Image (cartoon, rainbow, N blue to C red; front, side, top):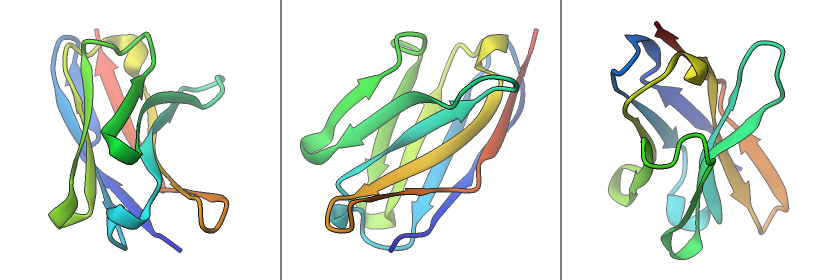
Length: 117
């Protein structure tokens, strides 16, 4: 099992930056994939960025060039650096982890990001 705790959300003006953190309760070496999803009001949850074994990363087209996913193995933490934020980035952001050995997903509690115009 793994427990995920997000932090770093908040209110920011358009064009600003935020960094989200996701702390895992176990070494992230044992986690096959981690990433960030978001859900805006009235919309489905969507992938923002994902990092898998070998540091392979994928990004949603809407955030490419603005968001960067990274990790600190020593801190068992994954980050999402968000630059040039837009009002349409407003959503609850969820940290995600996939454990192949358990064939299941884990989710954090979510952190609100609000971008004002």
